[in-house]
Image (cartoon, rainbow, N blue to C red; front, side, top):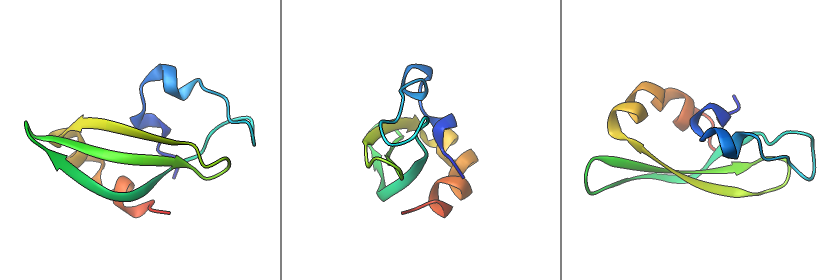
Length: 72
């Protein structure tokens, strides 16, 4: 499942050089930070571009199955 819905709109509009559209998957470990934030590293399966996204713990819990089920 493409996790682009987790990215801000401006990042979703970015074009992939290898394909027309990035396909985002979870890379590496999901980490929590101070202040109940969660950091998720996403990577495009086509071109390898990576982005870190920060989200509230509540948003992570809602999307946990999709995030953890799509690791590269």
